[in-house]
Amino acid sequence: MTSPPLAVEMRGITKVFPGVIANENVDLEVRAGEIHALLGENGAGKSTLMNILAGLYRQDAGEIRLHGQLAQLHSPSDAIRLGVGMVHQHFKLVDSQTVAENVILGLKRPAFRLDMKRTAREIEELGARYKLAVDPGAYIWQLGVGEQQRVEILKTLYRNADILILDEPTAVLTPQESEELGQTLRRMIQEPATRGHAGNKAVIFITHKLDEVVRFSDRVTVLRGGKVEATIDTAGSSKADLARLMVGRTVVFQVEKPPFQPHVTPEQRQEVLFAVKDLHALNDKGLPALNGVSLEVHAGEILGIAGVAGNGQRELAQSITGLRKVNKGQVLVRCGGIQGKLKEVTNHTPHQIIDDGLSYVPANRLGTGLAGNLPISANLILKDYRKEPLSHGPFLDRTSIGRFAERLIGAFQITTPSAERPVRLLSGGNLQKVILAREITAGKAMLVAVNPTRGLDVGATESVQRTLLEQRAQGAGVLLVSEDLDELLAICDRIAVMYEGRVMGVMPAQDANRDELGLMMAGEHIQPEA
Ligand SMILES: Nc1ncnc2c1ncn2[C@@H]1O[C@H](COP(=O)(O)OP(=O)(O)OP(=O)(O)O)[C@@H](O)[C@H]1O
Ligand SMILES: [Mg+2]
Image (cartoon, rainbow, N blue to C red; front, side):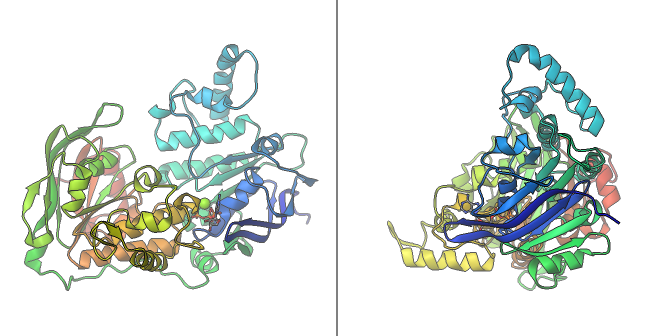
């Protein structure tokens, strides 16, 4: 039996950044007509390797063949010309432009205006063929995350990509959307490659979701510490096998929810730590996002918020933390923890609310969570620098700060050569860890976290969930917004479902199941609020 032709051959690829070997002598073979998953812990070198294949970075050593031909990739346009298209971990669409404008962005074509109609038609045709329907005339800001991703994929298909790279495509999708994406990718690899190449199109995708790897890919390459650990057939490999290859040890998938809270009494668990009452707020477009939300978070409790992205979860978190104007209703927090008093903080500044004892892990971690050009250590102390021992009066204590930063870098396994590196140079998952480390270990009595494990590898996910449960055991109240139902079911005490700015219902996690939650997420009332 002859094996199918190779779409991609990367041989001996090495890429060094100052102080870090991101890729070391990496060999990767991707067959025409296959979906090839690229797995590895945060910082393992996945994005770097794919950025080299997409012409964004130049390798220090090694060579690349595309469909058997030696390829010199000096820029993204070289890669596009040779049929390589990449959808990045952080989307690169222009918000203020339409879908069609974004799709042709960067393509040199005369008679721009005339072309728009044709482009729109071509986009519709492509959309129909790959079941990636979007309105070519819609503005990017009007689209949900899943739709924006479709635009990114259409953009590469429009450029006739024969090799499609997706960097964590499903990190931002709902379960249904990622299922659809899987179907689209399968459809793609059944199409013959263009440019006269033998064999079909090929897909490489990076993900941390092992379920998806098992379901959608034909083969898997695992990177660890910049080197290839193994390339294996997906059929016959289990999630546990993959996780072991990735981290080099056996991984526990279900964190154990401790059955009792040694640090809080049952009476204290009745106490409300923070709450919202009849909350109303608008979204960025000025449309109603919260239509009367009431919720209470108790001491020693994790309250989960389930819902399809865009149903008010983000606005709820922002309203509580002072980042979004509340038009009607109240936000209440118990200052000074369980001994303290509930006080109204509606429309207080984020600063005041931090001082009242609430920490926040936002969804958009680069935008609101981190200062990109500052070192990791500075980002880790961003909220605590005014306190002993990190500063004495007006003076920062460098030694204490260094020690503090090193401790968090160790505890959260942040991959970096030093605490003094600008935070923007970290890999996607390690960026998340910096902000999580800062917010979760702040030891505040109240925490609001939006998708805290998105983009994290299995090991890091495990440690974040464990930390949340530890906080709960200490008597903290946690509001956990997550699009990952399994995560909510595993670590929450109660789960509330949001739909169109309202709470559809709240149920104890032990009584909840995926199907019912799914129906409520689609807007059906299942049971009255408990
Ligand atoms: N532009 C850059 N400058 C300096 N160092 C970089 C740069 N890009 C990546 N690195 C470093 O290279 C290593 C590999 O990073 P990469 O982004 O490839 O990881 P990854 O496997 O994609 O991780 P994640 O799952 O977190 O996205 C990391 O240590 C990272 O800090
Ligand atoms: Mg990455």
